[in-house]
Length: 384
Ligand code: SIN
Ligand code: CO
Image 1 (cartoon, rainbow, N blue to C red):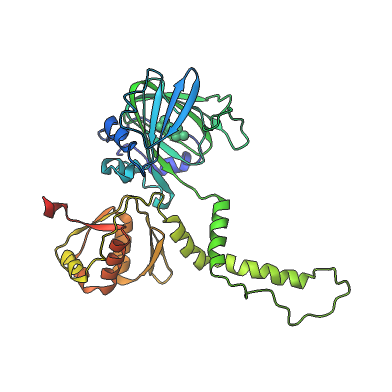
Image 2 (cartoon, protein in one colour):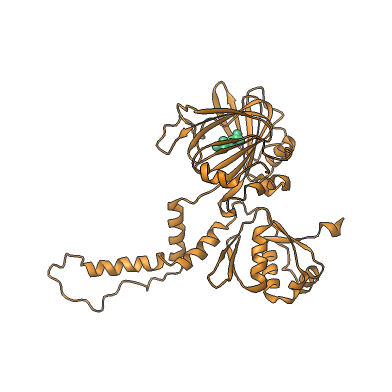
């Protein structure tokens, strides 16, 4: 996006206020056909929703849908929404790249919607930041003030629709235009004309309750029942009913000691946040990769491709070592394997340096990531 100042955006808009960005792309191409989107919505293992608006009443159905479903829809406005399309369509995955001024661990996935004239999901707010990229057709977005969990909703068994939504801004988006909506801001997008496609680059932010629950669950896993309060120095006390400060200090310390372990928390968070949202896209080979094949591929300078459903991130240790996190697993990396880990986190596809055959650590890392289905050799050229 040549015409976009990321630093200015982060300073003035990110998590603060909505922004309409009129077509900042050098050249905008809609990356997916409506028919292909409908095809994805028919596949098991892909999350999709169909919302129809009939006589002011919205109905929700969940996919996968039968192939003839879309042909049978009547004149009433409807919209189809498909989650994580970036996992299945490389041109849609490419839409994330310009938004990587936000770190990868904050990125969720790309949802794609298709709507007929008047179609939309209704006025709502989300917990997360989103960039809404208009792919084709037009959509009128009305964006409003900040709402929260206490805001009144319309009675609806499936949809969380805001009651009395009052927009403060209104824009009609054309292909290539982008609307940024921070968490909590009410928004309502309605297709203007048929063939309206919108790409939502969605972010995520862990809730405090999920963090505490996850970290505590992890700590509990390593604790045993014999790790318990003990008071071999117990003294008599005036009132046996009192819980003395010294006992409380000891109990509180028992809880806080583990909880405040920053290094253990860092490893847990890396593993937790790199867990896949959709584990279905399974790239695991039937047999573990053979060392000879691995060495031969590296010598040939073959490229490594990341599974688009996989999550990669890393933490840099004070020692310069790298802890790599991929799909819920952690890998301690130094030297060549650390450089490889950083390269894998930076790009979805990397060219391997043939010199890596000399590094057992790097070879082990590549083999482990292939075996767990997070990367694969990209041998398209050989097949051609
Ligand atoms: C849509 O694409 O219609 C909905 C996206 C959103 O409101 O988050
Ligand atoms: Co939304």
